[in-house]
Image (cartoon, rainbow, N blue to C red; front, side, top):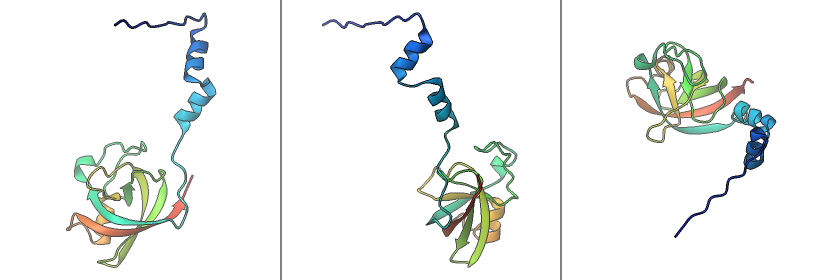
Length: 141
């Protein structure tokens, strides 16, 4: 059994590449600048949240900001960076408004990774993982 490959040669490689990809430089730029769609203010979600701190303190987050475990921030898989979310722990009755500036969590179907300060303010830090109810309050573009 033999396999025959065809090679198309074009005097303008970029044109051939664009034709094969079915795109243009403008489309490529659009893809590079694509970002998650804004979340509707008032959108609600709930689930387990964990927290992170010392090992990541001072490191760059997915948004490019430096992670500060003493600020009210969080990681979320899909919400746009800078989105503000009110997080409530029904067990303690406490709420905190965080800013999404990182991606995650990547473990155990959790909905959010809170900064150490956010978990402290919620009263969830000693539990490590806590059930939370969340409401998007602002999607600052």
